[in-house]
Length: 286
Image (tube, rainbow, N blue to C red):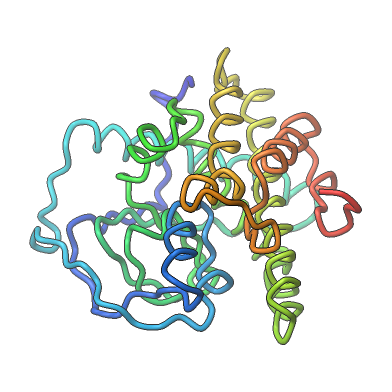
């Protein structure tokens, strides 16, 4: 990616090394499924961690405000700041064309555990977006997991992760998240999961819309970048994660979509650059 020297966002909160409260949101759906969800990216606590119980949170060791990251971490911090800024430019333009105003999300960097308006969560849940405070949360250590555990290296794979979370913010601004939550209330677990899949696939598509804009208008994307993002999307499909975790696949419990679906919807956003093309809720086949 051609990102060095790009504008850095002013919407980054660095909470690395800060201690948090004791309660960590955890799913009440069994340790095995929690272990799978912990590997997902794009977790929306208000949906995935509904009805959570409280468990002990790990406490960070560094005094508040005195965290010193490695050279690799500091470069990652700069990288995500530039990518966030680029998503801001993309979505501001798209919203303006639609006669709307885009409200920038804030990106919170943390280590170990973090407090949010959606509750307290630890790093195991992966990157997530909280609609309650309109913030994206990420422990930069997740990128090592993405590279080493999921075999999805590359800067554009990392950018895709962030763009997916920003996609959830776009859904929140457009009122999509609220509609889905209302539909999930009282729905069967299977129906609630099916709606969650459509939410996540749309966020993948929105990430593709950003990638289209970044490639077309700012030439940020180089040869091989798209392949890295597609590899990341495939690596974190529900089917692949469940197969790794327990050796079997249960489509009725999917919350994010299969590897094939995640790749397909990211490519749809990438190829069209159109928000309208990302309507997963009207799609007869995902």
